[in-house]
Amino acid sequence: MEMAMSFVRFFVSLIIISNAGKEHIVSCNGGDLVLSDFYNETAISRIAFGSCSFPKKPQPLWEHISFQQPDLWVWLGDAVYADTKILPLVWTPSPLGEMVDKFNALKYSLAYQKFLRSGVQVLGVWDDHDYGSNDGGKHYKDRLQAQGIYLDFLDEPIESLRRKREGAYASYIYGHGNKKVKIILLDTRSHLRWGSDCDILGRDQWEWLEKQLSESNTAQLTIIGSGIQVLSDMPFTDKWTSCPSSYDRLMWLVQKNSRVIFISGDVHFGEFACLNNTSTGYPVYEITSSGLTGTCVTWITTDMCRWLLTNIGHSSKRLQPFITEMNYGLITIHWDTQPVSVTVEVRGEAGSYLKQTISLDQLEKTRNLNRCPQKIEEPPVVKKVTFYTGVFLLLSIVFIALLRLLAFIAKRVFKIVLCLLGITVKNAAGGSEYVNYKNKIIKRD
Image (cartoon, rainbow, N blue to C red; front, side, top):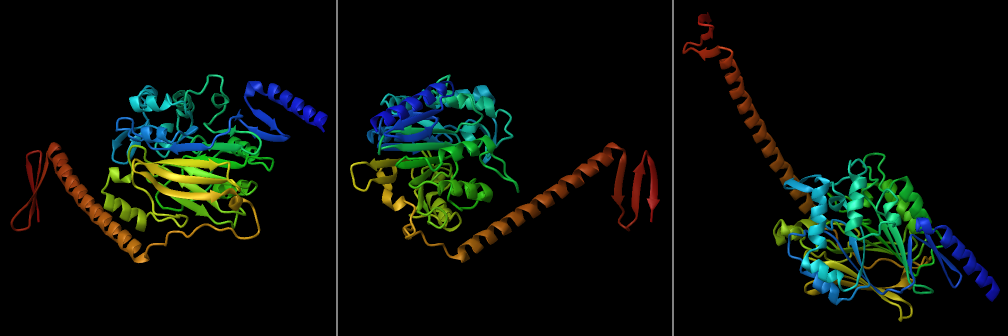
C-alpha cells in the first residue's frame, strides 16, 4: 500500500513539473487529486471580501478588516472606479494612463498600505468599473490592456498564469487533507455578451469552470466569487439570472459538488440570499458585500434608499434585511467543530450587521429536503404599482415638456433661417398674408 502511495505521489510530481510553465497545478494529499490554478498547503480559516471603493473617499474599514485577522482578502469588483463619470449614472472609459493613476491612488493610499503590511494575501476579480467600462462586456476595446493594469494592482507576478489567458478568472486551493478550501473567481466582464444569445463567461472560461467543478473536486468547501450577483432576481442590476442560459449552466455545474457557496459585490448594499435545493440537492447561499466607501445612501437619502430596496428592489432569494451601511464580508471556517461549520457575516464599523452559521453537513447533496431559512416577505404589489405609475406619469410629463421645448426651438430656428434667406411672413389684421421677397411685396388673400 505504501509503495502504491509513493508511486501516486511520484506520478503527480511529474504532472506538476510538466505543467510548471503553465502554473496549472495538481496536488496530491493522501491520495486526493485536486485541480486548481494555484495551490497553497497552508490551511486557512478566515476569508474577508468586499467591493465598490472610491479611493478619493475616506477608507475607514481597512482597520476594522485588519482587526479580524483574515488569511485572505478577496476583491469582488469595483476596487476603483477606473472609468470616468461625465453625468450622473453616465460613464465613459478612461485613457489607460488615467486608469493606472486611479488604481495607484488606492494601492498606495495610507489606509490600504497599512492593511497590506498586515501580511494578508490579496486575491481579486473585477467588475465593470475596474474593468474600465460601465456595464461593459467583450466589446470593450481595451479589455486586454486593462487586464494587465488590474493584475499589476493585485501584484500578480509577471510569469503568472493569469497574465497568459484572456480573462481575469482564477482558482486557488488552500489547505490539505480534510481542511481544503477551493476559491474560484469568475470573470463576468471579459467575455460577457447580453441579448437573446447572451453568455456571461465565454467558451474558454466555461470549459475551465467545468474542470474546476468536476466530480473529482474534494475540497471541503468551495467558494465561488462573482462580480455580479448570482441568485438575486432584483430588477435594474446586472446579474446572472438576467441571462437564463448561463445561470442554468452554472447551477448545473454547481450541483456536481456539495458544499458550494457564492460571494458577490456590485450593488452598493449587503445581503444574504439562498436558493432552495430544487436544482442543486442542497441549499446554496450567497453573501453579497458591496460598499467599502459608500452605499446607496451615499447618493440618496437613507429612507429613500431603504424604501426602494424594500419595495422595488426586492429579491425572492433575500434571507434577512439588507445592509446600507459601509460593509465588508467575512467567512470563518470552524475546522475544530463536528461537523465543520462556517459563519458568514456582513460587517462594518459597528461590528456584525448580518450573521449566520451554516453546518457543512447541511450543504451535502441529499434526498431529504434541507431548505433555506425563512426569507423576507414580498412587499405589497400596490406599492410597486404606485411607484411605477408615478414614474410613468413623471416621465410622460418630462417627455411632453421636452417636445414642447423642441417645438418652440424649432419654430425660432425656422424664423431665423427665413430671415437669413430674406423671407419674412406677416399676418395682416384682415387675415391677408404679406410676403416680403427681395423687396417685392406680394399680397395673398
